[in-house]
Image (tube, rainbow, N blue to C red):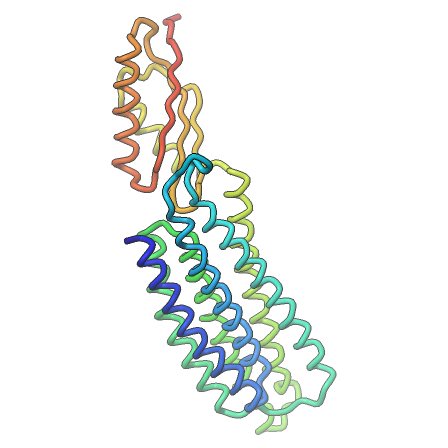
Length: 294
């Protein structure tokens, strides 16, 4: 079910981005708009990112096996990092093209560029809301990466439209400085893309290094465990994201006279309580230590 939904989201993204890429690149060149063309290049990167997700989503949902006892969830994290790097390279390309453009004669873009930018904004707003909702529901880093791609396009399309409007006004009223609005907008688009690329790459990097989950979430786990009166002390707790699921390791102290079976049963109850409250927890490893009253 999860894999089918992820593939559906990715296919919707691929098809919509192909349409938008062709439209924005063509109109950007025809209408003489650097900002719309840059937005089109970003959409082309989205197509590539969505195709990568389609190729890897099946692997990420494969169950654990002998060679991969913790599952294959990190495949999604790797994809998220690749998309982030791709967006970073796209932002550099757009900046380069904009800087080169400043040394050429300024031309007024066609009004057609405004309409394609506004159309892109509406389409991307719908796609972002849909993809983000699915990503949260299924705890998918790969779909979340697609959603953030759409988010970048939303603001980029607005910036492109504003840049074109400023350039058109500059051309109509002979305000030379406004003619640079389109190229300035393309630089702003590059900044937005770079910002999202940084966020995605940083998150993927931290997960691959197995950084602990957020402290608030860890405290929530602790609260669940402390509800068991037989737990005398939590000696250590840590949890790490493994793509779309979380792995938890806990060391607790119980009375030294408890039997192995009693400790085993307590561990099962704690594991069940944690997984019932947090459905993205896939495994809970509990280590028991003997507790001696002081």
